[in-house]
View 1 (cartoon, protein in one colour):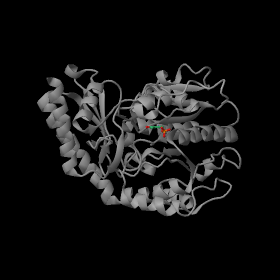
View 2 (spheres, rainbow, N blue to C red; view 1 turned 180 degrees about the horizontal axis):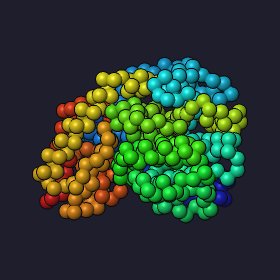
View 3 (cartoon, rainbow, N blue to C red; view 1 turned 90 degrees about the vertical axis):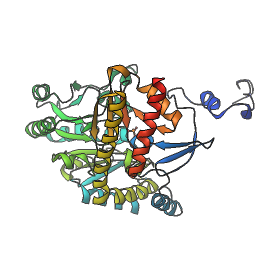
View 4 (cartoon, helix red, strand yellow; view 1 turned 90 degrees about the horizontal axis):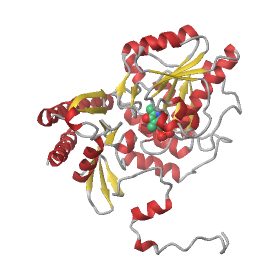
Length: 414
Ligand SMILES: *Cc1c(COP(=O)(O)O)cnc(C)c1O
């Protein structure tokens, strides 16, 4: 920048707090909490003032093994000392190992790596369109998705997602996307046709309020996809990777999708996404049809391999179920004391607590007060508290965390 176009010189950085500087140098699309974390260990985080937090948010259901897990640190450091990046002009051992491991643990026969959930879904949707074109000709392009669903923030995925507040305001949208009410079997039956190329949903809607799909709905979607030659896509970006107590939720439901997407927990905090599919469908991703510079990055894949090894352990997965039972019963006790919730729903260690009339739309207040007391939680809309602690959380910390919630509620009660 030349002197004539330079802006006035900003004040010395030392006069601004980190957060003031944030507001000055970052785009304003986020509104982060004021505290800034400095270090983490397991389910705990410490901020720059040394204050301790229990982390029941896990970076939005990402830090499946908590913070600074020694084995993940080791896997990352080992690969970092070898090479960081080679692009897809070359392949790399960690990527092959991870794909192989994913294929041996799931229905998958072919894997595509991306860097995020949105990119994994972008690949899934593009593949479904291309597969339909290859096999059934022009016109089979309709994508069916559901109100309140969330599939990421690229323009295609955000338009497939069922929340207009995220997709409006960016000009003309990609076409032939139909939104239906979630879990409405009849609406689904009357909408699917020969024109449908894919049905996509989250087995448990995360961002949209923590709503599990009903068994009947999932079964119907599978039957309709079979009847009309459409791809069934499960977006397991949030509920997958052990969070439901099964490696992937489709395994619990006993219904196999044609394409499954994973991200969030897959890298335990290192960015990675994956799209899993069958050989027959993957065949439509011919050389050059899709790609990513960073997809399959060796550091991401080395870490994810280790996450997968740890999370797929049957003892680990069954512990998620018992931890879920404990968390629900602690929340129920809290509820009896404060009349907080009308419903606690979800699956495994992804729970949504729908607030009662008395606390209506006060999720933000409760979340803020919890942070004040030293507990990080999430919301899923104004009326739902969302809890997604690391899968490695210990029972005593589940009890301690809910006790902190109790203190926060007590404080808000005045
Ligand atoms: C978070 C999320 C995404 C988007 O993942 P990013 O990594 O933020 O792109 C997609 N689908 C679901 C179900 C999610 O929860």
